[in-house]
Image (cartoon, rainbow, N blue to C red; front, top):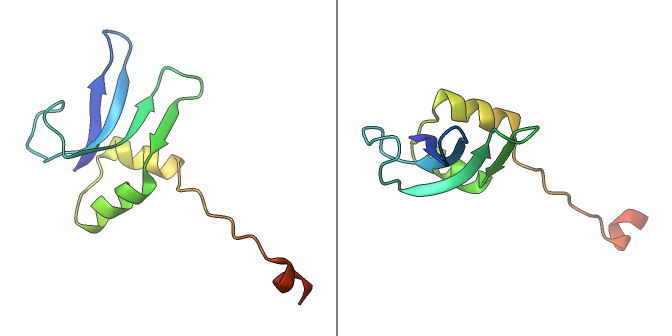
Length: 90
């Protein structure tokens, strides 16, 4: 499962987006950290490794409802393909 693991001090939440077995504790040993979420900034900061999230989803990992919202609001950037001078002239 891909879900949030809370780190950070009391009343100063900061979250890691982790791949972890569903039965493990919230902050238990995770398989991989695939991003971070900081709700204290304005607007909230989300850093995701989109290719790793896609990999884990392809092998059956489910997203928690909160992580699903974060992924939906922060889609993977679309790579821009620049045209060479030869194809632009044609």
